[in-house]
Length: 210
Image (cartoon, rainbow, N blue to C red; front, side):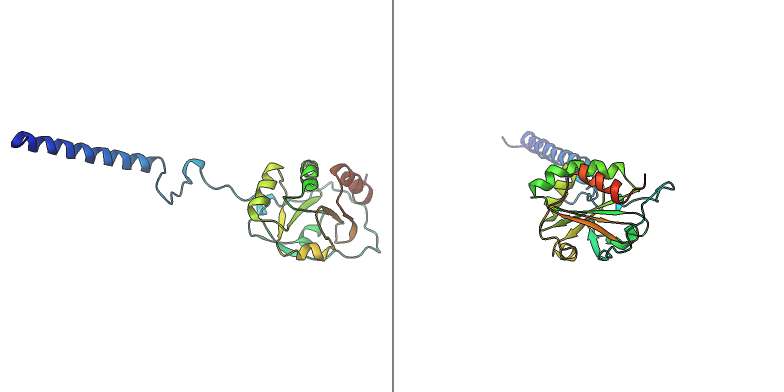
C-alpha cells in the first residue's frame, strides 16, 4: 500500500507504539520498578537489624532491689564490642546499674535454638531490671539475623566474629551463660549453658532480692 493512506497508517502505528512505551514507563515509575528505587520496591524500607542499639535497655526501675554481690567475686572482663547494627557497646556501661546475663550462641547451634525462645521470654519479663546480651560467635550476619528474627530476640546482641569476647570469658563453644552482678562482679558461668527456668532460678538466688 502506497500513497497518503499508507503514510497515515504508518503514523498511526508509530504513535501507538510511542503511547504504549510511555504508559509502560510511567507504570514502572509508579510501582517502584526502577533500579535503585529508594522506596525498597514491593518490600518497603529495609528493617533495622535485630539485636542493635534500638533494643538497649531504658532507665532502671526505681523499685529494683538487688542482693549485694559477694566481696570475693572476681571482676568480669570489661569487654567493648559491636552490636549487629554496627553500634559500639561497652558491657561495663550496662552492669554499672543493673545485672547482666550474657548468652553465647551461634545460629547453627541446635541446643541454642531450642532454648532461645525461653530466653527471649525471660528477657522480656525482666526488661530494664536485668539486661540480657547475646554474643554471636562463629557465624555470619545473615544467619544471625535469621536466628534473631525467628526466635524474637529483642535484646542487644554483640558480634564476636573473631571469638575475642568468648575467649575473654573462657567460653570454648556455644551455648554458654555468664551472670554478672551490678557493679561488675562475675557471679557464675555455665559452659554448655542453662535453660531459661534455670537462669530464672539463678537470678532469684544470686541477684534479685525478695
